[in-house]
Image (cartoon, rainbow, N blue to C red; front, side, top):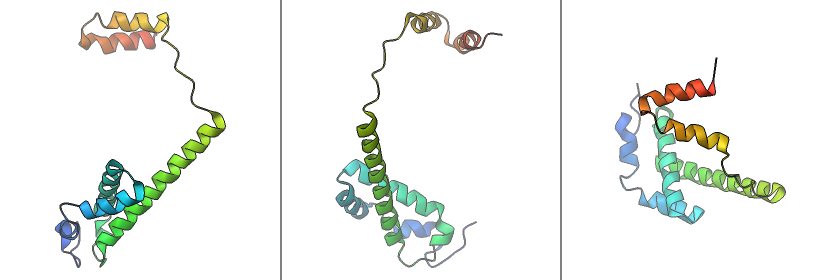
Length: 130
């Protein structure tokens, strides 16, 4: 159960954060340079605020907490992308997938011929024979 605090229980977060979070999205768009990423980050930051509502409801600046959390998420994503790019530079791109072999194509073609209900049982018998 969520206790009542300065912002009024469960509905407090809804009152503090606007229904249209375009201001937060605009701030994070400036950080990320991508509208879809900014929207995802605002959603994630709002979800994190909601899950921590019992502790956050006594804070005076909830919107600032969500904005700061969003900024930290954006930095984390940037660092993860930079690390991935560094790894790709060191190790090169992943190898191209080879064409499927006849050994994997034949069972799939055979499974397409039987009813869907029997398919999972048949596949289990093929994969894990006794």
